[in-house]
Image 1 (cartoon, rainbow, N blue to C red):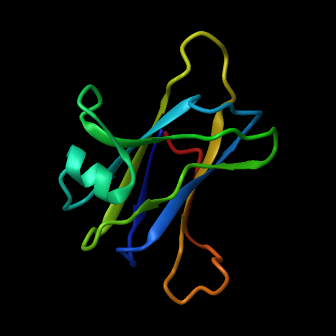
Image 2: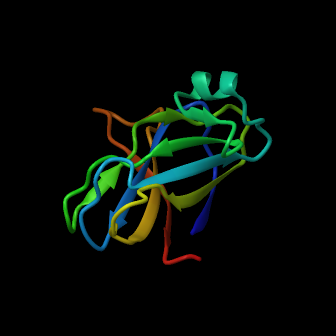
Image 3: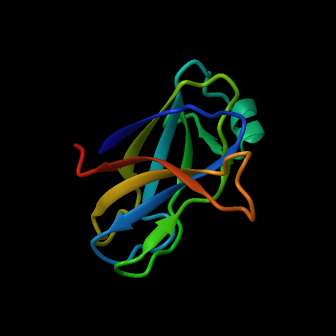
Length: 129
C-alpha cells in the first residue's frame, strides 16, 4: 500500500495514525517515508526524528502496538521545511506470523496554532493499493 499526503505545513511535528482490522504489535509494519524535495540520508533522519536504512534506501518509522478496533500511532517525527508532499509506503515487517491488515493511514500534524497539543488531521487515505 502506498499513500500520499500534500503538505501545506512544514517544520512541525507529525505522526501517522493507523487503523487495522485487528490488533497490531510493535514492528508488524514499517512505513517508508519520502518527502518530495528532501534527500533521504542518515543525517536528515536524525534531524527529523526518523530512522534511515541503507537496505530500504529510505527514511522509515515502525508502527506501535494497537488493540483491535483502535487507532494506533507511530512515534512523532518532524515534517521538513520546504517539503510539498509526503509519500508513505506500507511494508509488512513481521515475518513469522499472520498480522492484521491495515485499513487506513492518516497523517496527523501539530499545527503551530493548536492549543493544548491538539492534532490536526490533514489527510485520510483508505484501501489504496
